Image (cartoon, rainbow, N blue to C red; front, side):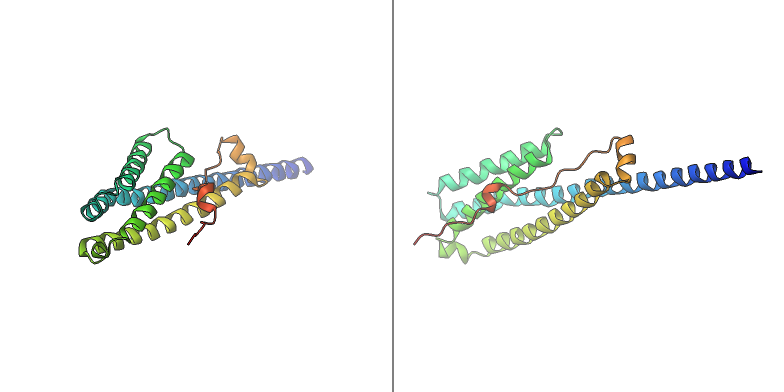
Amino acid sequence: MGAIIALIVIVAVVIILVLWAMGVYNKLITLRNRVGNGWAQIDVQLKQRADLIPNLVETVKGYAAHESTVFTEVTKARANVVAVSADPNATTAQRAQVENELSRSLVNLRATAESYPQLQANQNFMDLQRQLAQLEQKIAYARQFYNDVVLKFNTLIETVPSNIVAGLFHFTQAQYFQTDDSDRQVPQVKF
């Protein structure tokens, strides 16, 4: 009778462990899919921004044709973004780097545009600026959502006892969408 009870306890423990492992596995899969979805949301917003930039550059060019360095910088940064986003082997870090370069070049473009009051009054330019500002807000939100999900996913992979299941099924940590070190520095303003 004691052997039967011991066998029942062992079977119950094994069943509980299997159910727990299945639950952890399913949670890991759910979070991995959320990480992928978060990245896809960022990608959609970045694609919209990349599509908007040529119109913005052309509008500014009409007023500030002699500012070719700024236009070249924006065009080159956009081309880098398009190339890296088309590369299936590109990492999140590489994608973040080119996106941050594009953001910096857009800041320079906006600064150039501020030197031309007639451009600031142009309705097309104002609409493009508004659309770009809205996209930047959406991108910031999408990045925050993505990084929040990456945090949950990576935490589950690293913490005991779920790290056992993650290790057994070869789950690897996701990369955060991070800002370049140059973007973290305080800008210097000189008069």
